[in-house]
Image 1 (cartoon, helix red, strand yellow):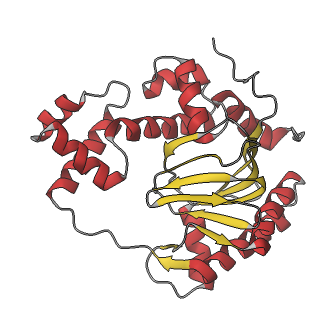
Image 2 (cartoon, helix red, strand yellow):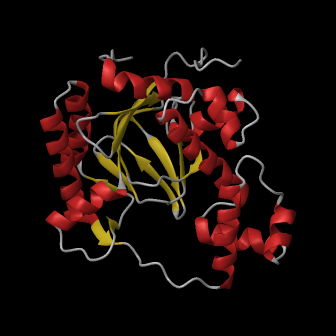
Image 3 (cartoon, one colour):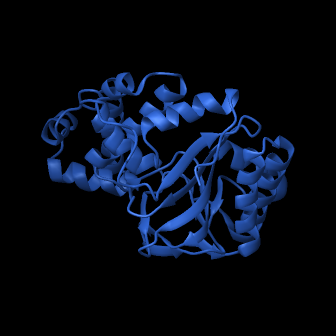
Length: 290
C-alpha cells in the first residue's frame, strides 16, 4: 500500500485541519516546493496569504502571482490550480471559511445584497495578510476568542474593501439544463460512472455538445469535475472517521494509492494525514512540522 508520506519531499510540509473554536472554518498551513494543485473548486471561500516565496494561482481569466503582503480571494465553485512561482516554492497560510460564515459576516457589516463574494482575486493588503496569519497562530495556541475575532475582522475588512454581490443564477438554458442533469447523474453513479458517450446518449445529446455545455456551466470537463467531486465526498467520509482505503472504494477510486494521488493534489495533504488531523484537533495538541 502506498504510504501517506512523500519521502522525496522532506523540504515540504503541510497541515490541513479544523479548529473547533471556530466552526465553519478549515485551515491550511504549508510549505510547497514541487507540489502543485490540480484544477479544482471549493464549496466555500479561499483566503490565502503567502509568508515567503511566490505562489502562482491559475484562475479562469489568467494567472496571479501571490507574494508576501498580498491576499488571494477565491469565490465558491471557481475552478483554479496553483504551483510554485519560484524554485524555492512558497510558504503560506490559507483560510477556508464556509459560504454560510461569510454570508453571516457580510449581512452584519456590509450593505451588499444577495450572495456576497469578492470582486478581485488578489490584492495588495499587508495588514489583512497579517490577520490571516494571526488566525492560524491563535488557533494553534487554542485561543478561540482571538481566532474567531481576528477571522471576522479579516473577512469584514476584505468584504468592505473588495466585496461585491455575486451574480444571481440565471434561468437555465438548454445546454445548462443538460449539464446539470449530467452532473446529477455523475453524483448518483460516482462509484461506477458512465462513459461520456453513454452519458450523452442518455441525455439525448452528442459527446462534444455535452463537453461544451458541461465546461461552460462548471468550468471543468466532466471527468475533471468527477475527480473533484470524488475527493469532496471522500473528505466527508474521512471527517466521519472512515478509513482512507474504504473511502477510496466508496467514491469510485480503484484503491487507496489512487485516492492518495488525487486527494493530495486537490487538498494539499494525503488522506491519512487529513484524517489524523481531524481526530487530533479534538484530542491532542499539535507539534508544528516546521
